[in-house]
Image (tube, rainbow, N blue to C red; front, side):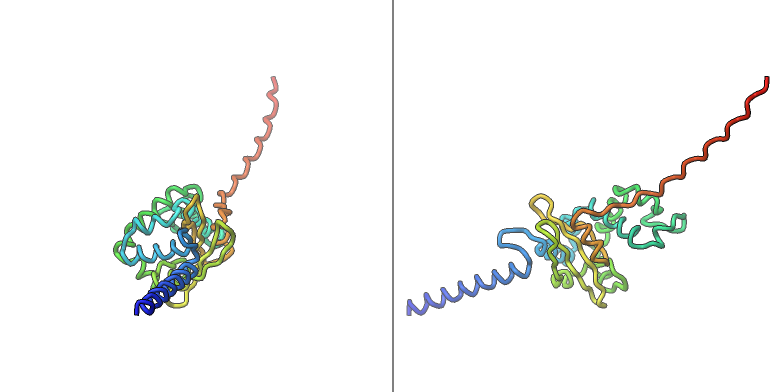
Length: 218
């Protein structure tokens, strides 16, 4: 009987080890390493718990804001060409956005702090009709991860309505962070590799040289 009991315990331990290995593989992390899959899991958990601090802890908000601006200006030629009082982004004109990563970062952080605790962000993304809103817990857990290198990966997230978005993640120091979102894989890849460049405002045309004055006749 004791021998049978030991066999049962040994079998259970083996099953547990197999289960842990499968979970580690699914989360794209090595055991003991906090990987990109775990970041997505923690983001999903923070959204379910309506915890904006835990949500923001998974982001490099400065790089996320720079990627946000770059994606809008580079990815949308119409927006890039517009610069008027009628077209605003969080109360900023396009030219202001280009020159103010800090301002956009502050606005994004404030927006997440407001909409995560109320559940508004999840509701909006669950009913999204356009890309750029991947913040649905179940969709984040089902993300397909694509490795770009040892310090950069992409997560392909599809929310209800079959709307897909790419999330860029990068390893900064010893931890992985979300650093950008884009509907285009090419753009998200640049953000993950930290190659995004916020376009500079158009250079001003040099002033025409003044016409030489006619010599004064004495």
